Amino acid sequence: MHPKPVLIIHGGAGRIEEGGIDLLEYRKSLGEIVRAGYNRLQKEGARAAVLHVVRLMESDERFNAGHGARLQQDGRARLSASLMDSCSGRFSGVINVENVEHPILLAALLSHENNRVLAGAEATAFARRQGMNYFNPVTPVRQTEYRRRLTAEHGTVGAVALDKTGVICAGTSTGGTGYEMAGRVSDSPTVAGNYASAEAGISCTGIGEQIVDMAAAAQAVARIEEGRDVAEAVRKTIAEGIVRGYRFGMIALDRQGRTAIGETPGVRVTWARCDGEKPELFSIGAEE
Ligand code: ASP
Image (cartoon, rainbow, N blue to C red; front, top):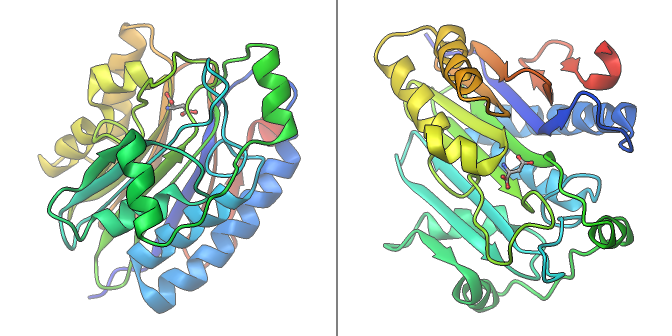
């Protein structure tokens, strides 16, 4: 029997008390994007759907990915993204690439190479060789945040999809936390922040260093592979994060199409899910 396709996306983890972001707008964007992505999922499969929705969020300057990425301490926006699908079992990504609109597309292109993770100037050079034009992702809002030396954990984007052939794909894209040390690497272009196997896929958001310490995405997927239910695996990983006083969240989807959202206390992941029925949405704005 073919599984029912499911798509789940997130727009990052925010502090409950965090102001300044229009959550209703966020929620509306996520709803529209998940619907568009679901259409792709039905027609073209999990990988095409994940690439489509992550690209849409990278183009939407409200999100901290692609256009609208946060700036590091030297005033430059460095973008990171990764992709993994159960069909190839290959992880690929870009770390701190500059002046491109869609780092997720670079991650997709790299999945066909022998060397699948590229960083810094060489990743940017690879983008140009692939015909990606110069794109300035910096927006006035991010410049203001930079001047205020703001760091935040909101707006990283991610998606996990299951298609009718049973392929699971996960993708994540970020501009980092903002005002971090120049060259800092987040969890998003690592298997701690984004992971998929034939059993499940996970995309994380929150404090990257803490997500890496826990190898959160890969670890939770491993738990599902060992037979745990997706909700239980996510709960266990989050519980371990709580013990350490960490702040992060994750979205998870398994091969039966079951989804789970995990959040440490004080963190809310904005997400949207679609399984062909009416999208079911959650955001801080809706709940608080
Ligand atoms: N995980 C990202 C980072 O540490 C931030 C986020 O999720 O918003 O760079």
